[in-house]
Length: 189
Image 1 (cartoon, helix red, strand yellow):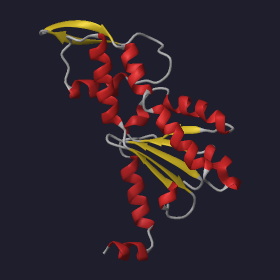
Image 2 (tube, rainbow, N blue to C red):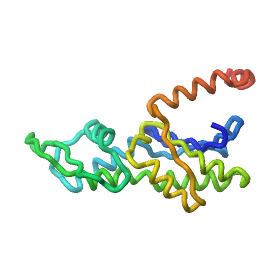
Image 3 (cartoon, helix red, strand yellow):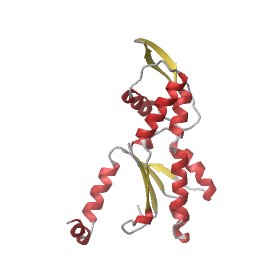
């Protein structure tokens, strides 16, 4: 994880952190107050804007996002069965889903630009070449390609996603804790 930019898209926040061989400092981190919950809220609004009488719960919206969420151009229509006054019917939610999922991207890209732009210029290219998406939000189809495309404004880059996004943060925290110098543990006491 040396010379890497980690982006953890969680439920409540999106956390970005430059990793460069030492414990990250305040200037190496940005926390955005948007994540999966904000995306769910936006998706619910977009669906209700198109289908005002459909019956939804936030949990239903979250399940739809987790199953079908994408940020790229749709390859197929996304239809889900929802109810209106208890009557099930298929609804095309392709556009609301794309709009809602894409809504988190500009703020993330802006934060990437800030973290890379304020990093040591000798190592900016390395950082751009090692952007890692993590957290539940990283599972949005096409997200890594879209962020990578947006990095062209900085000279290009490489964006990958962790293999097990739901557990990568825990596994990383454990690894850091196991390697943390004693002085940091004493600082917690």
